[in-house]
Image 1: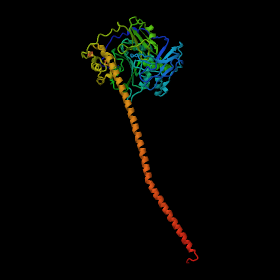
Image 2: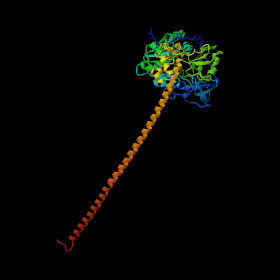
Image 3: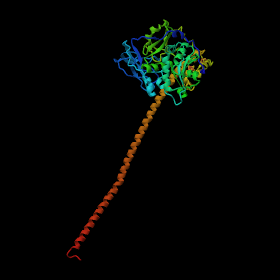
Image 4: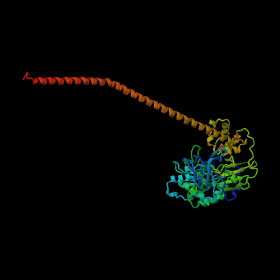
Amino acid sequence: MLRLFQFKGGVEPETHKSRSAREAIGEAPLPPIFVVPLHQSVGGHARPLVAAGERVRKGQRIGAADKWVSSAVHAPTSGKVLAIEERVAAHPSGLTTLSVLIEPDGREEWIERAPLDYGAMPPERLRRFLRDSGVVGLGGAVFPSHAKSVAAAVPMEYLVINGAECEPFMTCDDRLMRERAEGVVRGAAIFRDLLEPKRVLIGIEDNKPEAIAAMREAVENVGEDFAVVPVPTRYPTGGARQLIRVLTGKEIPASRRSPEMGVQCFNVGTAYSAWRAVAFGEPVVSRIVTLTGNVEAPRNWEIRLGTPLRDILPLMRPKPDTRRYVMGGPMMGFALPSLEAPIVKASNCIIAASPALFPPPPPEMPCIRCGACAKACPHELQPFELYRFSRARNFDKAREYDLLDCIECGCCGYVCPSHIPLVQYFRFAKSEIAARDQDKRKAEVAKERFERRRAREERDQAEKAERLAKAAAAKAAERQAAPNDAEAAKKALIAAAVERARVQREGVQDQSSIHPLGGN
Ligand code: SF4
Ligand code: SF4
């Protein structure tokens, strides 16, 4: 029996899960046009590999990872590329992102698919394969999984598979584990083979008994290093650091990555998609999405990535008083900016929100420094201080109080008796800090460039001065050498004249010796 630990803080909101968890996962139909964003993961933007007018097959790579922390993007069906253009992103900002528009031909014609026998290949090749198959964290974080599958210098003790799914309303992981447990476990085994941990712990909140039973059955044949562990239902148990704490007792400080402490964590949906890629050669072209909230038909659907929100409304049948659509859960999610925003790899849940379901918050009151927010914070931050500094735009101080460690879980705002939308203040402060950091980085780059140019100019000047000095020295040496040469020439002339005289003299003496009037 595994000993469980507790994380600090947390809350227990109403779960609202039973309605959407009832029915089996359905398969969403093809929309008239897919809008597939090329940037669907943390890291670099995928490079487009297709052009307008081109025909593509389902699973064809349409965007290539542009660096190591980046992930490929694939065609969700077969059809024709209509355009590659900026389209609204599934992001609260309402900004656009480069997207591939595909008109389906209805044939669902796959690329050639083949399983990958990775046992015989170097792990690096398997990681590249996962990157090129578009496998990223489907729990919502969308971090490229291949980049997480690298062990640190310390031995890997635990691989944690996250089936906690603590966000209210969300049931996509629950249904996945109930219906496709074997695939999830086999996917977890792929990450186990890459990371070689001593144990694989699959953590599932204890409000999902069917999922726990299905996963327990599935792990029976994979080895004793696997264990399915029910964990207490408490938000945010599904946060990676919180689940690691509960299952292993390890506290991962915000300043460190969990592999540095011998543990790594993947979501169950991620494990399943890794298995589909390896066992069937199917890249990530769809995901399970919970459609719920103020709807007639709450349910989980397998939806192809790039399906616009507008085209899934008939599946959920929103009630007439629906005002907006929230992507993610009510604690960490955000309102989608438009019905044209597409389903992406991060879209785990779409909640139709009405004023009755999510009543507008009462007016914000002053902070009474009751400390309830600090008690609820799972990261042991002091939200009331972060709020004070964020509100006063004292961002340096907010950073000093570890604002950047805030995971925006919303626990603090949930318990605040003054109804202060704390997370909104923190998001604002974080974006300001990010903007300032970017400005600072730009200024540093400009300064570095300026200093490099100045150093180059100084070096050029120094080289020029050296060249001039050398030339001057050479000339001076020449000048010095010139009189000596003249002297030498003069000496040579004198020597030549003396020689000539000597030769002349000797010639005269010889002639005198043979003169008839001479002696001897
Ligand atoms: S819970 Fe609200 S009122 Fe209480 S200290 Fe925190 S921010 Fe202030
Ligand atoms: S949102 Fe941030 S500050 Fe608030 S409880 Fe969560 S981690 Fe703590």
